[in-house]
Every structure is written in structure tokens, then in C-alpha cells.
Image (cartoon, rainbow, N blue to C red; front, side, top):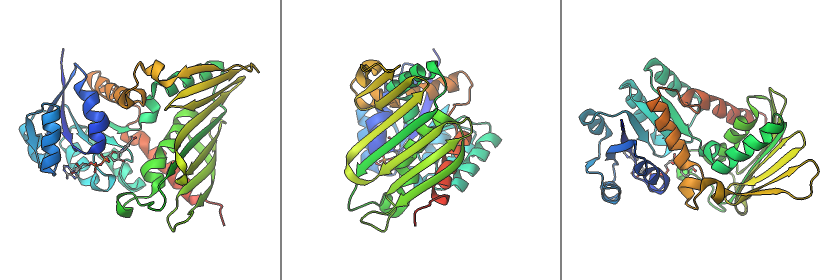
Length: 321
Ligand SMILES: NC(=O)c1ccc[n+]([C@@H]2O[C@H](COP(=O)([O-])OP(=O)(O)OC[C@H]3O[C@@H](n4cnc5c(N)ncnc54)[C@H](O)[C@@H]3O)[C@@H](O)[C@H]2O)c1
């Protein structure tokens, strides 16, 4: 079996939590070399996953190894130069969300990817959560989704700054909820939003109502000052309503039946490990399969322009006084 040879830039917290466990479990992947500017993190990851080739300069890693793909899992404000350099070397690239810090950046990244014939992917993992995928399939059997709700609550009070303020909450993190609405409903046509800065000068609550081109209505409800992390989705179609908490379970009601079908997130994923039941393993498997089959991933850089555009529309159409 041909193994896809991966070079990995970034040995940080999140990569260690979900990417290294996912990729090292796949028979058709070899993490050939890793890179981090922090020697301690580099060595810890190398030792943990038994990866001998370790670099503090990603250019050296790329020049000294034959790679099929490069993962670049780093804070978003440090991403751009490295992504462009790797694309210019005609290598396939995987990055985390957000895809850069501005719409302008992701448009340029997408153009460089097309020009250099690279496969690209942005890790919008919610699209790959086994429970959410199963529920989407069940709901869509009854007809297209006509209404969807995407909620994301956190309590970050009193510090609302991601990376000391390098990027805003909506673009950096609540973007997951925006991307899911696109994935469920298609492309947006009309947007109205209410954005608030509660107990702070920093915008920390983003609420929107979105009309999609195919007719669905999407609702975004997010607030970073409230009780705790709570992240849910509602999917509605003719005669069916699903209420989904991907950390726990989905309740699906059909045809006025009082009793819901209940589906556990752990049962669908056949695992209670976060990297499995929250879609990280499956998004990586998908990227690797796309490279093997010479297919452009669905959530490539070009596609993620649309999600960043919707984020921009939410900012532009704020009706709050
Ligand atoms: N999808 C999700 O649910 C989710 C959750 C958390 C974080 N993330 C994303 O994951 C990404 C990484 O977040 P994190 O919390 O792991 O960050 P982190 O700061 O813990 O890790 C980043 C690593 O990159 C290294 N690095 C920085 N510049 C480098 C360079 N030039 N060359 C090589 N290494 C370099 C740092 O030393 C660090 O080890 C972010 O984009 C974040 O938004 C996604």
C-alpha cells in the first residue's frame, strides 16, 4: 500500500490533541518529519510519536524530505507566509481554521493553490463529526433542510482576546458555527446580525439570521460571556426536527411523535475519544483519501473563501444600535 508522506509543521497543544493521534493511527500515512520553532515541544512530540526527523526550520524539512502533503497547524496570524511558500513548492497543504486572519488572505491562498495545482483543506471538523453527518443524512431523506440553528456558547470572561488580540472571536472560533450553517443550507443570500460587546470593548456575541439561496433560513447564536461551552445544532425539514449536541447525543422527532429517536455521539463514532467522536480523525482520513485519489477536498481553500465571506457579511450587516 502506498503511504502518504506527511511533513508536519507545529507541535502545539491542538496538534498533539487531535492530529498526531489521528495520523499515526492510519496505515496509509507516514509522518516523515516534524517541525516546530520550540525545541522542547518538537522533542516531546517526536519522542511521543516516534518521529526521528525533527526540524526547527520548515524549509529545511521540505528540502530534505520527499513529501506528499504538509500540515501547517499554527496560530492563524503566523500562517500566511508559510502557506504561500509551501504552495509555491507545489505541495498539498492542510491548515486549521481560521484560514488566515482576513478574507483577502484566504483569497490569495486559494489563488496560489490553484496556480500551483495543490490540494488544500481547512479543518472545519464539525462537517466530519460522525453524529452530525448521520443526522444530516436522516433529516435530508425527508427533504432539503429548510431551517437550521447553530449555537456556540463559551465563558471567556473577562479575557476575550485570542492570541492577545491578533484575531477576533468570530473569525477565529465562532466561525465553526458559521461554516456548519453553510454546509447545511448552501450559500447565503441575505444576512442581518446583532453583534454585542458584553462586559468588554471586544465583540463577544454574534447573532445572525441568514436567508440562503436555496430557501433555507439559518440562525446563528453565539456568546462568549455566558455559562459554559455549549455547542449545538438544529436541523429541520418537512416532518422532521433534529436537536444535536455533538458532545453527547441527538434527539430526532418525526411526524408529531412525542418520542424522539435518540442517537449517542459515542455510539456513532464507535469511540469516546474526542479526536474520533468530534470528527478530527475522519477529516484527516478524508484529506489523505483525497490525495490518494487525486481529488480536491470539499473544504478546500477556495470553498473556505465562502465561509470567510459569510463572516464578513455578518459584520457588515449588524443592525444593533
Ligand atoms: N478545530 C478546532 O476545534 C480547534 C481547536 C483548537 C485550536 N484550533 C486551531 O489549531 C491551530 C493551532 O492552535 P494551538 O492551540 O495548537 O496553538 P499552539 O500555539 O499550541 O501551537 C502552535 C505551534 O506552532 C509552533 N510554531 C509557531 N510558529 C512556527 C514556525 N514558524 N515554524 C514552526 N512552528 C511554529 C509553536 O511553537 C507552537 O508549538 C489554530 O489555528 C487554532 O485555531 C482548532
